[in-house]
Image 1 (cartoon, rainbow, N blue to C red):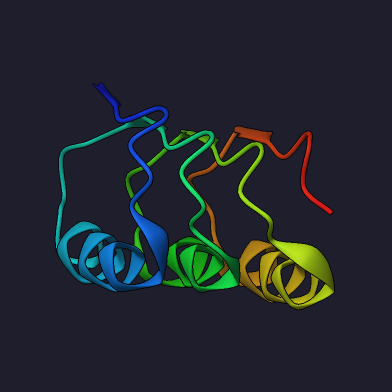
Image 2: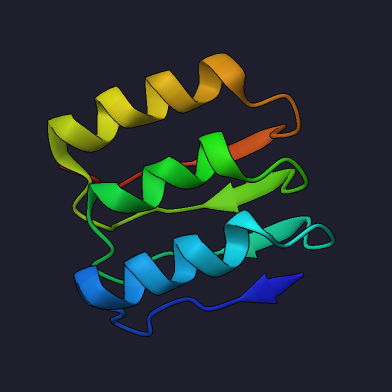
Length: 88
C-alpha cells in the first residue's frame, strides 16, 4: 500500500509516476488523491495489472481523463475499487 495523497506532482511528476508504476508488480493499493495529476494518470489503468484499489480523486482529470479511464477499464482486470470524486 502506498499513500501519496496531496503531493502536488503536476504533469511532469505524473509521467514519472506512470512510468514507474507500469513496471511495478507488487503494489495493490494506491492513493494519489489531490495531486494535480491531470488525465495522463489514467494511462495507468492500461499499464498496471496488480493495483486493485486506486484513488485519483480531485486531480482535474476532465473529459479527456474520463475517456482514458473508460479505455483503461476495458482492459484492466485487477482493479476492484476506483475513487474519482472531485474531478471536473
